[in-house]
Length: 214
Image (cartoon, rainbow, N blue to C red; front, side, top):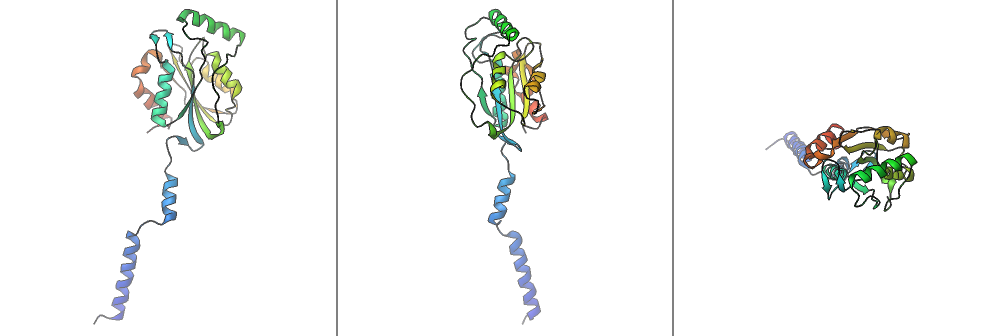
C-alpha cells in the first residue's frame, strides 16, 4: 500500500501540471487582446492621410488619370491601414500644365485660399496625420493652405510628404511647422512624380524607417 505521504505528493504534482497546461483566464485573454494593436492606430490615435493630388496634365508624366500624390497616399494607406481625406477642388480641372503653373503662381502671390469639397469629421480621433501634395512654386498648392486654415492639427504628429520633379520637399516642412507650431513634425519624405508608379517599395522602406510599417 502506498504511503499517505506518497499519495499527497502525487496529488500536488498533478495539480501543478494541470495549472501549467490549463486555459488562460478571461482576464489574461483580455490583456493579450489589448496588447495587440492595429497598424491603423499609433499610441496617440488613428492614422490619417490628408492630401491633394492633381490628375490631368502633369510635368514629365503627361496626362494622367490618377495624380502622383494620390498614388503615394494609397501606398501609405495600404501599408499602414491609415484612413484618407482627399482635398478636392474642380478649379484646376482640364487645365494644361503651363496655364496651371501660371495660375498657381498667382494664387501664391495673392495668398488666395481656394475652396475645396467636403469636410473632415472626428479629427480628435487621429493622432498621426500624413500630409501630402505636389510642390507648386516651392511649396504645397494654395488649396492645401485652405485646409491648414480650417483644421487645427496642433498637438498631433504630422508627417509631410511630397511628389515633385526636382523640388524635393521645397518649403513644405517649414510651412507645415508655421501652420502648426505646436505639432510634432517629423519623418518627411519626397518622391519624383515619374517614379511613383513603380515606387511602392521606396514608400514601404520609408514607412518602416519611421516606424509606421512592418
